Image 1 (cartoon, helix red, strand yellow):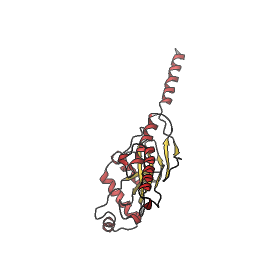
Image 2 (cartoon, helix red, strand yellow; image 1 turned 30 degrees about the horizontal axis):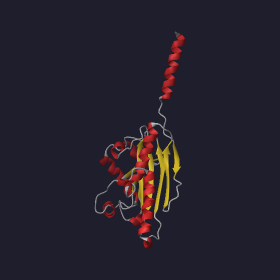
Image 3 (cartoon, rainbow, N blue to C red; image 1 turned 120 degrees about the vertical axis):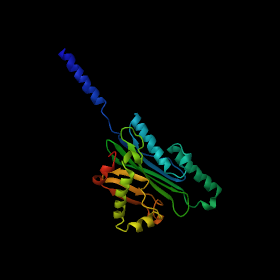
Image 4 (cartoon, rainbow, N blue to C red; image 1 turned 180 degrees about the vertical axis):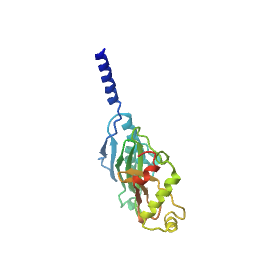
Length: 239
């Protein structure tokens, strides 16, 4: 009887260890296919064939595609690269006198934060199809660390209005200017302070990033600031 009890306890401990959550691990994947256009892609991939890894990788690829100009027409990353090159080859054939500048498409991701609750992937894409300048964009992709599902703003922040007040104060501090009306009118095109599309996590705190044209002008580039966790934590549902 005693031996049976010991064996039962052993099985319980074994099952407990096996059912313990294992966080996702990542590797970097690079595309080395030769194209006529200048194309590069280096991105994070979750390692493994389990459901968590598959969901994470699907959402990373989908997140990359949504940053691109023809996102609605794309289904996977391979087709994005191939179609971009085909479009460039066709353009050179139809307009040889206007094809002096080589088209470019560059994709890069970086895992900037990972905890037991959340993973943040920074996605940077650059597209150039001639003209004065290309289209450069950054996207923060926040994923549930246990399911791999995409987390929206309401999944992260408890009260948007209360958080917005905190974010506004840090935004003004980042500009080193206390003139509230001047900054919001100049940078938000006459509108009151707006939260950026991109809110992500880093080891330093919560990162808020405005893409080019989201505020200000193209020449001013990105606008980014960090709210330390010590101030942001009370506003967060996950950390």
